[in-house]
Every structure is written in structure tokens, then in C-alpha cells.
Image (tube, rainbow, N blue to C red; front, side, top):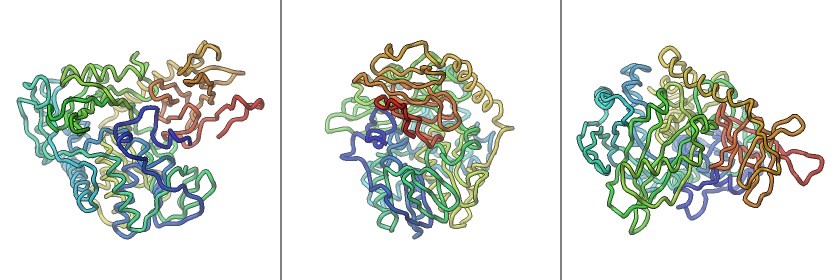
Length: 531
């Protein structure tokens, strides 16, 4: 793994990564070790699990193949909410009213847990309680907010309808107000969790790639083993589950911009619209906004959205790099104009029924657990995972276990939406697949351009970097062999089937793939590839 991919999963750097004095790193694993629990993944999910277990005096080891938070935690916008991406009136239909109450409770308790942990461990991560405002997208039904208000009141949330929305240019915009939401600096929070884990005797290793996972522990690509009684895989998309989980969730790219505005001109709050049903009626992409103190004169307004299925940005004829302009246009229309100083994107795993998968890995040994399916609410779902998996490992009864069980299958209640999305994504992929070998010569590839080419009957991904050096990789994803597509925004090869992503030099940066693309060394006449 090169230095860039160790710090962040793409060419853009988020505000969170940029604002740290230095990346959060530890030594790589250089010898065999052992623990009661080994956790694969150093984002908020893995560290929340490690923290909760360490508080019970359980010996934990965390292994991360980049730096801490270099995956999706460092590319989030860090909303802490019980106002979920998927409406509660839909969640009630899928899970039932009693279960919907438990779901709301779990996210509320996740925010409380973060607040309590910040105080207990004295973590300086800018945690703040604030209101969140959900307002209607013009493509949504007029009664959507009223239906959601009634459902939220049934599940016990502190919500009310308000005829004016602070912060919006059109203040006469009706919105649901969700009280006692939260926000924080996610990487500063992770640093605090790391310090607390180490104080309790835990160990953390970074730049350590796990190659094999089984019921006895993990083995790295350097051949070192960590033996453990329990294994937790918290890698955003599970790298130890080849088929089962990837038929129950989809990978989406989501985009964010950071705009400077004069300090205190916009109130501190969270905002979301209800989603663009013209863009996708099944999983409507929505916009989400928060404030962030920047310096003595300016605040940073972080706006996200313009989602699309990973690797399929061109399905709606809008390349990845053009999404930021759409975000800026939307923001200027609804808020205030400002200077864009940050651009980045992230990956969201959208589960078939709106909730994360947390618990025992299906069809696997009883001592192996996974965390995946963040559904756009990764900060709270990951915190729920910390509390829930700690209870599962210690044998403590937890009312959320059944709800988040990765083996659940809600096909009857979400089947139409699920299969439309599943079939739609794959039909777009299959339709485009015969054209994957672009009609272009290697010499014709422009600087900072990536193309799929065919050489000697095999497909390769070819990218010319800013110095016009050519990089060739095998074009088949190492997960299940789908042909990758070039992401010209983050300068990565993205798999449209299950969301695996690779650096232009072939290093894997997102699962479910866990092996690098074969990389062609142009200086080697024998055309050897590195794994």
C-alpha cells in the first residue's frame, strides 16, 4: 500500500483528514500475537467494538490496512442522528411497530453513548447537540412529512412540525425538527477511542493487511498470525464474506463539498431533504448539510449528496467529477453562496431493508462477526455495533440482536424495491460490459485519463498519471471477476457489481475484494504482475 492510500481512500482529502496535524498511525504487525478478540478494520465500527470490549477488560487487537479512519470514517460528513435516511413509516412496514421503536431507541442510545464516551474519556472532538431539519424535496409526495411525523411520534422520537426552517434562503419552508441530534469531528473521536483502548491494554496495528480470516484468527499478507477466540470484521463491506452479504446490499458513491461562509451567518444545525424520486424512486438520493467551525472568521458548510451506484455514474450520463458542481448549484439555491475549499466522495453500503447488518457472519463459524450495511447512517450504526457485538461476545442479552442479525431476509416486504435495484444495477452493468474494451490505443490515452483496453485477448485498465506515466492493471475485480470501471474523480478503478475499489496501481482500498489487481510493471520485459 502506498502512502496516499494509507491516509485516505481516494485522490481527494476530506476536511477531517486535512484538519489533523498528522494521520493516526501505529506500528505495523511484525510478529505473531494473540488476543481474546481480533478486530479487522480501524474505522469507527472496528474501534467502537474494540472500545466497548476493552471497557469489559477483554484483551483486543485492532488491525487496519491503512491508517486509522483512512476508509469511509474519514470520508463521512459525521451526522449523529436518529433521523434515518429511510423514513420511519417505511421501517414500520418492514419490521413492525414494536421493532421500529427498538430501531429508533438504538440510534438514540448511540448518540448518547458517543456523548458519554466523549465526557468519560475527555475526547476533544467538537461534539455538539443540535437540531436536525428534514424538508420536502419537490419530487416527493406532499404528505411525506406528515406521515413521517406521525411515525416518528409512534416510535417515541422528539420531533415536531415547523413552518419555518432556519438557515434556508426560503425560511418559509416547512420541515420536521428532530431534537437532540449531534455532530462531531470523526477522526478526533477515533483518536480518543484509540487512546482509551490502549490504556486498557489493547493493541492497534496499522498498515497491516489481513489476507486470511478463519475461526482461529487472522493471517496478514506478511505471514504473521493473530490467534483469537473471536473475530470481528468491520471493513465497511465484509472481506470475509464472498457471496451472502453482497446479495443483500448495494454500494453507492456519495459526494461532499465544504464551502466557506462568514462565521455565524448560518445557524448550527443539520439539514436533509427527502430525496430526489426522479433520480431513483426506490432509493432516492438526498442532500445533507451541516455546519463546522473553521477559523475565527469563517465557518465551513459541508453539503453532501448526488449519489449513484458505484461504478455506474455514467448510467445517468453524469460523470463522477461533475457531481460536485451539481452539489454547489443545489447548495447555492437553498443556502448561501460560498467558496468551495474541499471536495471528496465516500462509499455507502445500502442494505435491502434500511438497517445495518451487525452480528454473526452467515454460514460461518460461531465466533466470527461482521459489521456492514451502514445505510448512510454509519456513525450511529457503527456505535450500535460496538454495544451489540460486545453483548453478543459476552453472552449478554440485547434487544437489538434480532433486528440487526446479518442472516435476516425481508424479501417479502422489500422484494419489489430490492429486485428493481438489484436488476437495475446489473442490467446497466451488463448492457455496458461488451463495450468495456474502449476503442483506443495506449498511445492515445491522455494525461489523467483511464480506459479499459484489450491486449493479446485480455482486458486491462490503463491510466496515464499526471507525469504521463502509464499504469496497467488486470481489469477483472479480484472479488468475483466483474470488469472494473475508471473513476476519474478519485482516480480509482471501481467495481460496479459489489463496490470494490482499487488504486490506479492496483492496491485494493474497498472490499469486498481483499486482493490487489494484478499490476503490470512496464519496466519488466517479462510482464510480471504484482499481487
